[in-house]
Image (cartoon, helix red, strand yellow):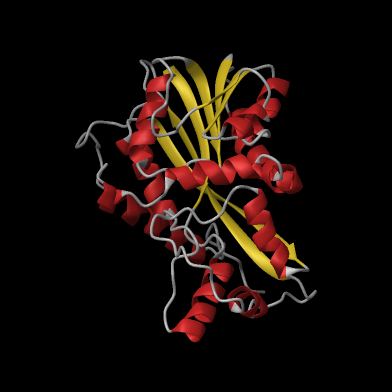
Length: 306
């Protein structure tokens, strides 16, 4: 990719994760919850996996996979962060993966792909590392994540300096995620939403937790100067408290599942092969709803008023 298309400073991403290797245990509960929700998808399939790749699991994902009896290799942009998962582990860049084709039958990337400049390219590399009928499980924050903090920082900086520097990473939209998988060549792509709500008695703890997880600002166009001393106190003070006095931080996570193509997988019918039109199907549904209402029944999915 040309420099003009690069959004993230990958050297900064690596430096943040190297530093966070010493502090990430302080946010292990949140990372474990996100990983557990992602790995729950393994219970929805009868397929059994024997060799997995954990991409950027921060010492959380690889042990969970090994507890399931799956031999797991852990990789991270940061050597120190990779070492938290125990052997076998290695330092590897998600944008330039070193694995041979068909090396794994399962790849898990929990909260590790949102600092990648070429996300479609990274997804293609991950698919190539999968064996036929192998599974990718990935989660990444999407639009709406940390919306409270983003809005407060923007308003506070605008009031102090008349403008605002980018301080929270841009996020993809949920509706685009399944299309990304399809574009990268995955079969049966699915993207759904998981939401985590964190409540903080001390708003400053939110910023400390982000830093502890290695989630500092790594935008290439980030402000390099020291911010005004009053910026963060002003922004954090503007966060609206919940009824209990705590402030909310919302994590909206896209959970992606996609399979490496293989013979025998379910496939959509060929375009134009349907025997009935969508208009006919909708007309039949509408007729059925009207008949149910005439008989005094309640249409499915609606609540009757008594």
